[in-house]
Length: 235
Image (cartoon, rainbow, N blue to C red; front, side):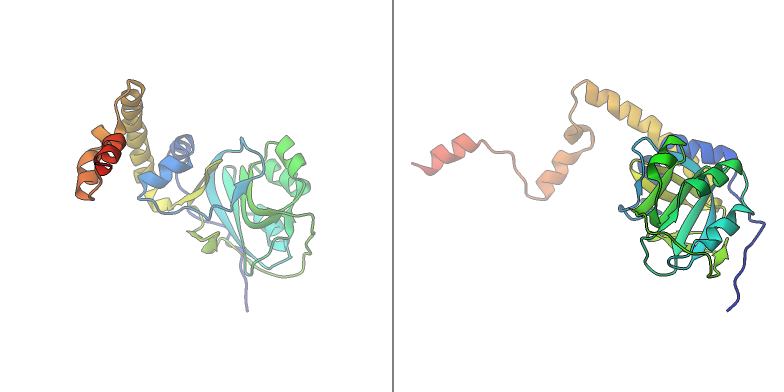
């Protein structure tokens, strides 16, 4: 079986990437129709971690990080490594030294459906990582894999050059072709939410301005006076 490292990929434009990153995972997920979210077990290694960038995808063997090292050779500033093992694995594929190498080449973060180690050091470096596990179990460098092919990472399809947005709420993928569209939809959603926020601050009930009273009636839900009901039942 042959393996490949694809050097040249089409990446999403920088402007929509920035807008999507500023918008945050929850807003982007809603703005693109509630798709693209990775599994909720993907957690940041430190609470304030936040990143947006373009995906360099890595299909990797369990317990072997050779292809992570190889991927750095084809990365550009602003890229995020997206690592998907071919079989479930929680070994610590990535640590401080790989983080130093990534930062030297302008790589802005790591998304890995497996384990990482040296989390204190990576946090001190402000290198954001989302992983399935934290483990000191090391890996070897013997098994080939692929770089910049479509992968499924934590349940989400990621193509090379797609936009990755990650923060405390998780990780979401935006297809490269939809980046500008979803960025615009995210801005519109933020503007709409600011108006909603102001109405809520003034005491207006979401029940009213979302039109939920009619929905409750349709579902057979009624507001009743519990005390009156009890009194009536005792007669």
